[in-house]
Amino acid sequence: GLVQVFECDLLVNCAGGAIGLDGVDAASAEDWTNMFNSNVLGTLRMTQLLLPRLIASQGCIINITSTAALAGYEGGGG
Image (cartoon, rainbow, N blue to C red; front, side, top):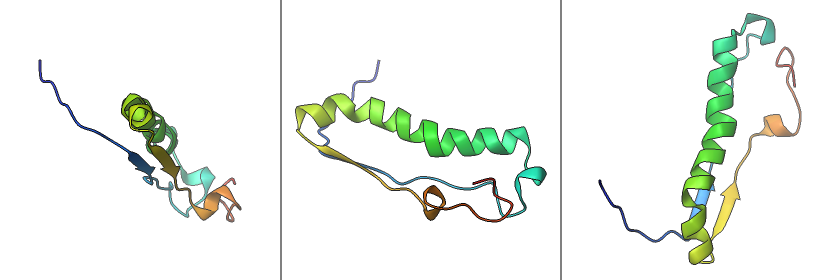
């Protein structure tokens, strides 16, 4: 198989998105699944993938969230 060797001393998790501003009543289960996969599982998977290299290099992880983490918006369910 393919072997990749590289060092990593920084991971910035910054991907994310919202289902839109039409409100939770207009969002489908697929919309919510896609948003969860990107916002939550994307961060988890990248962290798990790079964690051994980050530990070896004594690196760090920066997680950037949106303002939606602090306050919801009308119709957004937050």
